[in-house]
Amino acid sequence: MSNSSSIRHFLLLALADTRQLQLLHFCLLLGISLAALLGNGLIISAVACGHHLHTPMFFFLLNLALADLGSISTTVPKAMHNSLWDTSIISYSGCAAQLFFFMFFLGAEYFLLTVMCYDRYVSICKPLHYGTLLDSRACAHMAAAAWASAFLYALLHTANTFSLPLCHGNALGQFFCEIPQILRLSCSKSYLRELGLLAVSGCLVFGCFVFIVFSYVQIFWAVLRIPSEQGRHKAFSTCLPHLAVVSLFISTGTISHLKPFSISSPFLDLALSVLYSMVPPTLNPLIYSLRNQELKAAVRRLMTGCFQKH
Image (tube, rainbow, N blue to C red; front, side, top):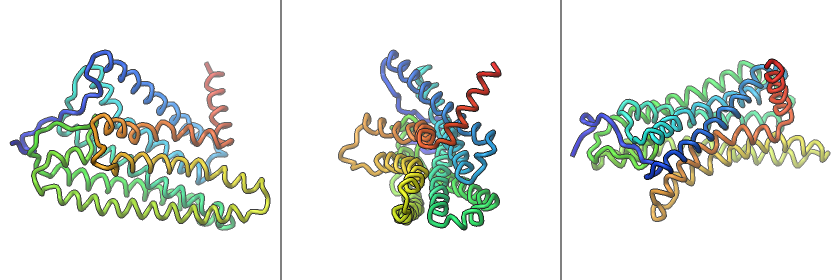
């Protein structure tokens, strides 16, 4: 038996056993990280440089791209390092930092998606009040509230999780540090406090989910009452990317954390963790750019300008 004071490092789950598969996983992770970096980097650059994109919708999209970049940069580099150098060690402080930043960026993404839902609601259901309800100051306050809430959310979970006595070794059944895996190492009944905090967090997450669902019910009701087909199509085209991103984010996280324990297996757990930690940050830029003509045009102008300079 050991306690948390004697633990200096954790052992992460290896992505593969053979050297060839480790190198293959390194290449796959490198491709995923480069795709996420390119997609989110282009969105950030296009919105920052395109003055015609300085609107609430694109301001929140820029914040979402920052959260996506932060999220995938927290887990993938360490997994790539472990695959390349055939190791599975992460320091105690490194694990705490990884858990904090992963929770921080994941929470920020969810809160930003909730705020973006409000932006779409006001845009379609209350268009005459759009400039008043979502002026630059209001947008800045909402974005700051999302980031601050995520910071507090991550700080509480990280401090509480790493204050628990750990008595069941230091091997984590995951390729990055996450709360459920650390709770499995805790002593009997010492994890009840963290479970209570998770329950409170679950209520907060569920509250945001209810707000999103209620908002989209109002949005779809308003869109269906638009007389012209062109107007309905334009309204739907501004909502569908956000709805797709929200669905992808919630579905992957829900499947990963709420799956029945009876179907749990190391391979399935690993596949689902890759699904919810890597797929949304990589696909979000593609989803938004495919449906938004303004964003596609801005990215095209940005890339054309870069090529012309070289």
